[in-house]
Length: 370
Image 1 (cartoon, rainbow, N blue to C red):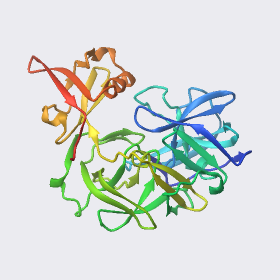
Image 2: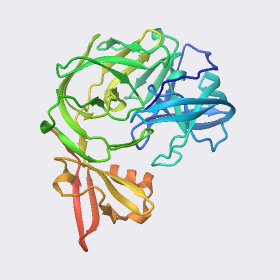
Image 3: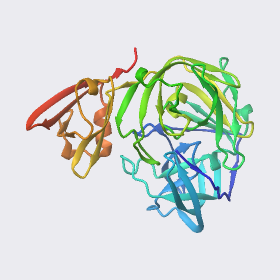
Image 4: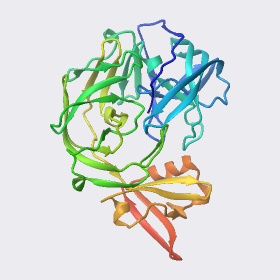
């Protein structure tokens, strides 16, 4: 998630119909992805209600006139200056954006080309966006009169920053004092909240190593996975647990897409509302091998271990070089195929050399909390 202290916004968004529906899918990292059309060619973009419009470089030559620089601070509190350029015309069905501003940043995803940029809040705020996970469809509408309503839905009042257009929900976790959280479809986790004296770390599973590799770069802060039993919105609605959330010494607070995908959910900037209708089958509990792997020029290595997980019990270590993943040589894996191998089943076999001996461990995808 990337947010701005200064917003440079020009251009216009027009809509020829009352509503459209477009399909969406998830990237290997769990971000929501749609396809936009520029000059007759479709390109994949991440949908991020917590970010500005972004191009990850511009090897496709989509941007036009240089519009200046803007000062940004990412989700790890890292400041930077970014270039601002315009894109002449973008279409999503009958929705058209003309002369929209995009930040140009250098970012390399694990799966190269999986997404070339972000459609963010500056483009999204003009309409109502409804996400329907059971059909993997997004309905974009002129008003709530043109979305699908459900009998068990909760309408939650949000706060909106009038300068940056971020949306915030006031949330209380397990009876704690309520705080403002970004409603952030660009955060691929469930719930992220800061560590303070109300959290007892001895009740959590610690995260060893780095905890994320997003647009904000590598996060090396202290991080924990906690189980909670309830989440309540100050202005209506709530969810019973158990569920797990990420707690760290970062200041960042967000309600992410892994939580929101348990609902038919709608974001309405004009009325400052979110509508949540729970799906029949919801999954809030963390099921994981407990190890994060990544690829560099030397092959595959372990970046993260989660306490009490299968990887932790197998005594894997952060930094351990891996020779094979499910029988495939590490030298044959890039970032994208590595993700495919990790996700292909609930068992992960890793082979590695330690103290000149060949070792193999079979990791199981399990709940961290019963």
